[in-house]
Image 1 (tube, helix red, strand yellow):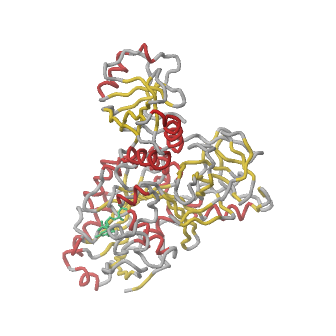
Image 2: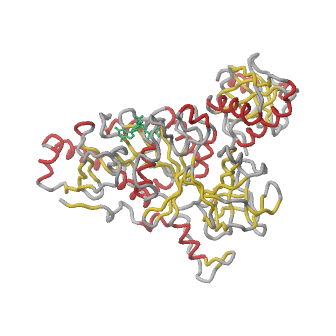
Image 3: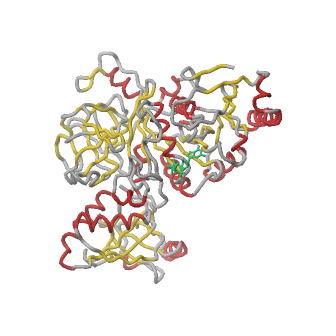
Length: 563
Ligand code: G4P
């Protein structure tokens, strides 16, 4: 028997990971007065990932345990206690507090060993918004938390689609092994079938629920025994070699026999490990554990950090932007108003894509065509905000927004201008016709709906040839309707009327030379326009979409609004 905690060997050596995005600079190279090697080191040690799951799979619990190991909190339970008076630290808005759910995504940074980790938390509620999708655009990899008794659930599927679109590495943590779980082979198959990605279990569970004995580490070829604990503190794990005679006594002959058979099957018939395939998002390393009892969290964190990537190059109009060899640049992926009611402020979240950001530095806002100093640059630790002096590619910072930024905007230096590929507009799935009750409040109504749309919480459309007294609002999750109503009432003092519409599908018309009024469409298809003047069609069913394509040769429809 042996005890370990920090000297855990990872399945892949560090240098493989560092390969991506790493261009060794000459020692005397410098950018903006900073020696490139320091910059390079800072960027290389960064890991920026999103954590995704279906609600209740254990995302918050796992995040909390990461923070515990990173020393950012000393006692688990301080991040959230849903059923007590406390709320998740990321619950900013009042509506979230009222309903005890997390609507907005939050960002947290902490240090672990030599890594600087940025976690992008995605809202867990099933009525999540487009913010969730956008958050994934800012991440370099994703951790997918799956409930071992439930397998792949609806929300996971949706989020997963966006990860696949971006070809980012996806790591799977199968949680709640301390409860009765599905057969691990069935879980692997489900992930592969449902999500269309191959899996490679890094460790393998021995039993589950009351019978949960621990996991077998396929790389170290040893078993880590499960010891139930309340999960509040960091734990040391006990490891047993597969050949160790005592192992059979510890886990029982039956479990031992099953383990031997499982391992043989995995080694013989399972996928081969390939770091390249992990990096391009076609092979997901899988870990089993129990976030609540803190089992398997630290080994997961260590392996994940070595296998995932440091900040990746991003594509802009001037070409691919390497994070370390370019001066400061970044893009806005999220705007949030009134995070703090006392201050009535609006914060733009920026993902830094290259170089270093320094407090007080002058940056160039491409879409506004203006030089500016970013006010109050802050780093987030959920609700706590800290004004920062510097940040590097990979980091997410929040900057005060006096109403000038839009989702997807690029910020860079004046002498190295570029435009990042924008963030696509994701198709809303629910629609309502919205108007103000009091016609005298028209100005506030237009201001409120436009600002909330600019933040990206909702999308607004107009019927062709109609004014702004009445708009069609599209949202990704129905909860956004409530958020809209709440915010218009409390922030803009406007009461609204809302009529839910039966449309389910929205498509942007890609052809520029088509007059939408001349299209041959089913009677229940609606022609609308977005704020950028682009034409769209709303359909009540997929049959209508097909009809439009069949009856109008050459018509091109798209599910995403190009940025
Ligand atoms: P989410 O953010 O993905 O929505 O999930 P969250 O972490 O809030 O976890 C959902 C529920 O599952 C919580 O219980 C949590 O304690 C429990 N849970 C998380 N990880 C594990 C695990 O490894 N094993 C077991 N047995 N349970 C786990 P709850 O009763 O809904 O909330 P709470 O009162 O504990 O906050």
